[in-house]
Length: 336
Image (cartoon, rainbow, N blue to C red; front, side, top):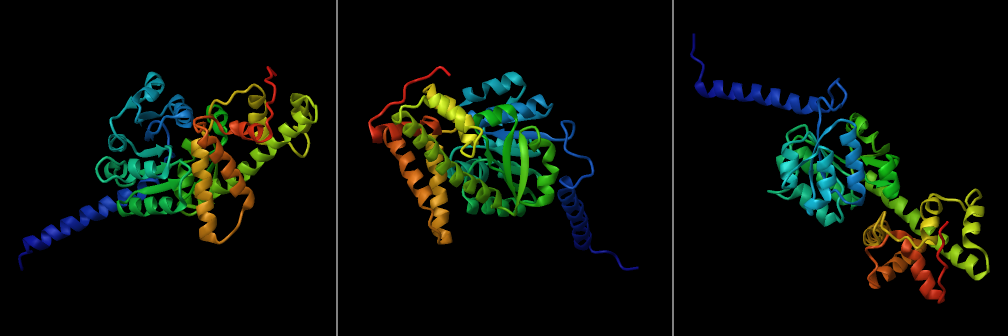
């Protein structure tokens, strides 16, 4: 009986290990047992205005959270709730099965997820999932998905809409792009933050969010223009807003920002700087598609004016300041 070559034995063993390993990778997100606090460790990168509230919902739902933020003090409220603070995105991923990120700019997304040494993907175990909830570039979402697949991992682009109130109340609209089965498996996590809407393959979540921003941009211009017009016409602007809220001019933007504007409350639920970034990505994609959206272009210029006045740290409702300056008027503050 011929002896088996030691080399063949090693190759056979390697093949068996690789088969078992790849089966584990394939089955992690396809497991019969749904995601729950008892079987899924969650990581969170970015604990700003939106991220802090969203992450807090997961902690309160019983999930074990490891968090990272460049400014550590902004993560302290989550640590007080029971989260563990990690020194880097890489450290977060090493302790997590699913890693969420919601940061400022595409360059930040690339850094926290794809950096070869400090990024999350470098430490994510095969079968793990990256969920980027930043409003970012669709092409970057596709790049992250490809890099994740190369490591036997999964990636979902899942930007959100609903502002700081939606984040606090767990009522965000979530636009998800990626493998439909992965998005479905993540439903227990998404459901504590809002309602997930599957939009298609990698990048489609970002495209949906950008279309959302196009709609919001023109809606905000209409809202503040109407308020200035009503003021100049001698109307009580508070009564005017209340009157139109149940008619065809009613909108989520009016509900979220009308009273804030009247109170001169410009605290950021969503920063002007980040909205300018979003609208810039929209315009870039319009150029790639060969389409003209003049309302979007005008809105972007008006928001850029805020940034030029050093008001990029304010919320998007601060657009009223641009219209007041253009028309040399100032709406009277209200306690309504």
